[in-house]
Length: 120
Image (cartoon, rainbow, N blue to C red; front, side):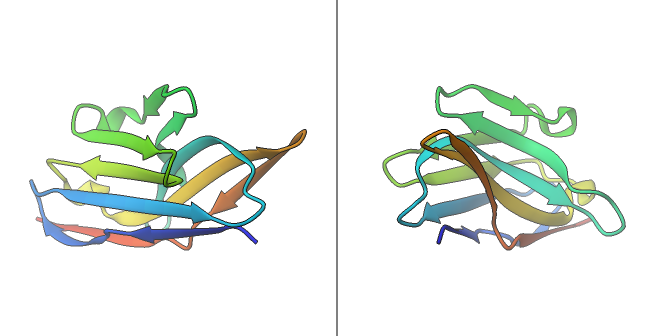
């Protein structure tokens, strides 16, 4: 059983910052290839915010570039999302995502989600 436990969400005023964390655990987690964050606002689909590969390559959705940083600590199986200059349109449930490999099988896991609310 693999679990992703997110933390760090909450209510913040526009212009503020939040740091989300996600810890992946489980005996059969395998080799983690990609760790990332998606978000889903009410009535909208779940979209990528940012992700990072095992080699350190990152990608960001255009709307968060320049004010968001994703990082990972492989020793702790943890991924972080530092969000600065938050805007009301960043309000959403943020989901942690992990893609791993066990032998030749790629597996995907999702966290339960953490609410981020940005007030204007």
